[in-house]
Image (cartoon, rainbow, N blue to C red):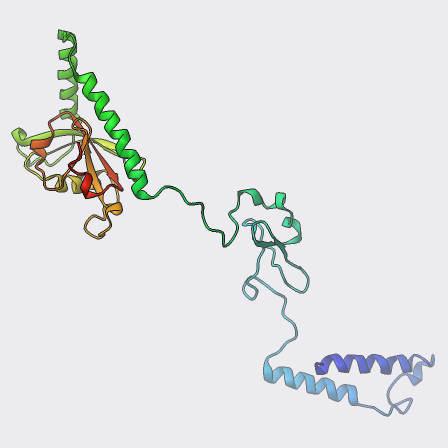
Length: 279
């Protein structure tokens, strides 16, 4: 038992004895010939000396700097598991809360993922890539069917010419590329497989560039993470899908030989090199 606690108890016992006499003059240590006269003063001096040597100044009130445990509700700053405030563990979300937020409806327990719980497994990157590939193939087939002229009128021909003119006007690219070598394309990022800050855009490239180089330029323009040169996993690599051609393009193919101005290419992730030549 600490010295100061035992001293307090002795002092209280001694005072109970002195209260037996109602004469005020007999309450001092010297007036009633106390056998422990001066002991209380000596012990107090010893405690003060010990505190000055060790730096101990009695129990410290917990604060955010000295006590790490806090109510798990983000907006609550209450310290828990202290001598004055107990903590209550929620068995559902496996977190600890103060008394105010101990019930499940007080801390939105239904919206929390239990600590230590494994996240729900979803489709792999390859599965996402294959699903996106099927969608793109269906899109390409629909575009091919719509491109077959049933009755080409002058109005439709003029609309196509105007669309091409608008594409050339809005497309961005390297101005150093000669006009006769430019290939104007609609470029998109597959929202099913990758995250892009810019989902789509119109660009022109040199027809002599390889598809791999076009991929790097397009990924930079759409602000898509490109780890093709850093990862050996096919699921991490970006690929280029030619919508009108209905297939993935190989990295080494020349752009001008596989696409033409006005076509659409899509960047996607999660499909392997074996599908690059798949029709």
